[in-house]
Amino acid sequence: MRVDLHTHTLYSHDSELPLDVAVRGWQREGIDCVAVTDHNTIAGALAMRDWAPLRVIAASEIMTCEGEIIGLFIQDDIPRDLTPEETVRRIREQAGLVMIPHPFDRFRRSRLATDALLRILPHVDILEVFNARTAFGWDNRRAEKFAIAHGLTQAVGSDSHTARELGRAYVEMSDFSTPQEFLAALRAGSLVKRKSPWLVHASTRWTKLRSLFG
Image 1 (cartoon, rainbow, N blue to C red):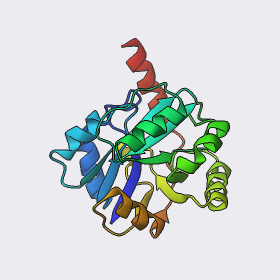
Image 2: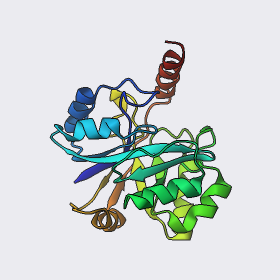
Image 3: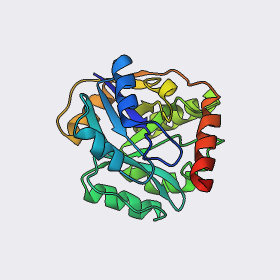
Image 4: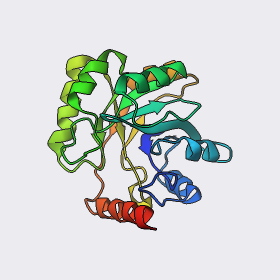
């Protein structure tokens, strides 16, 4: 199956992507499973899970006081602006998995601080080693080198915020039933990496401004 582990919908402040448009796009690209990782909420994932004809993993890209952490397979929202340690603890309380997105993207002010990453490293399940929105290939390669050096499970994600980005990066992996089966299948999976056009960042910035100023 094809799994995209980093996606956004109109439930994120920087995306206006309707749920039905996203689902049609994923079907067009042959995506079988998505982690809907809207910023600081699982509402979009839960809404989509009720009717979407593909598997939806409830997840969230949570802003801590030192940058973003993704919680996969969670059932409840986790407040923003907690410490990385407390955020990880709350993900674990829900039997979720901890994934670090775009850890070395030099243009992401939202990336998790390296000091924080090192502090929580024993509790990290997955490192995103390719983000389709990361501008410089070296930043993705640095993440891959870090994952190999520390024995972390590798993942990729489209980080899609618009329809044109859907399915740009995904993992080809075996089916799974539980988070732990998912983790094992991910470790054995194949990573498909395709970058998104640089102009998608302009769309996201415009959407953020519109959400701030109405």
